[in-house]
Length: 272
Image (cartoon, rainbow, N blue to C red; front, side, top):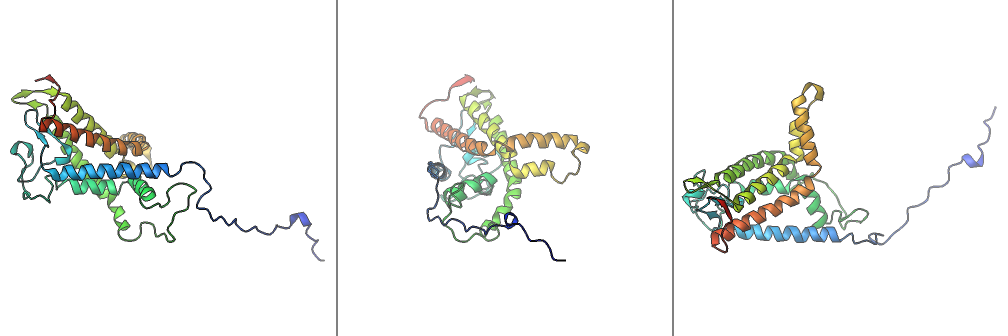
């Protein structure tokens, strides 16, 4: 007995070919503004930080023990002894920053950060520059080849950034010693605010979130780690904002210490 014929309505229609759109995007909004502002912001910060890192002066205020984070820890033989809290071991030459033991790790931590990857992939490499905007590249290999294979080092750079945050915290509290006694000024407020921002950014890292709560099958059996994971997860939701905030606090803190050290203006003192 032959099968009944299929009704015409049940027959699948012929698939339509995709529309051939030659335009890079049909978006009419200013989608290019965010990548442009990202490029300008990062280039400006990198230029300022590079100049300051190799300036090798105006990094220490002896009266109030202010040390800019761009020179912490100050481990060059060119550092003034009072600023070298952890000794002086590097030669004093112009092409080696005074904080050469920390700056490369901090740079690696920022370069491999999940947010910064998105930021410079979209802005500098246009990969892609925005949603629904075709990228100019014809080939995509992800992060499986050199140099992007090095992005996997982020989890290790986090440990270095964590230790450097401890050093920055030590510097901030050491600055409360004015002369032979306690001192407190506007510079102390700025140094502390910068340290708080740095800790928030560092702890909001995706690697930190995995270290705190990863590889657990039952959160109920690890209540302390669950609370820590919850706290880090809240920070992680603000990782992008904290990434930009810390660029601002670092530059502002360095500029303030430089200005006071150079004598452009005096520190506003509350005590001491």
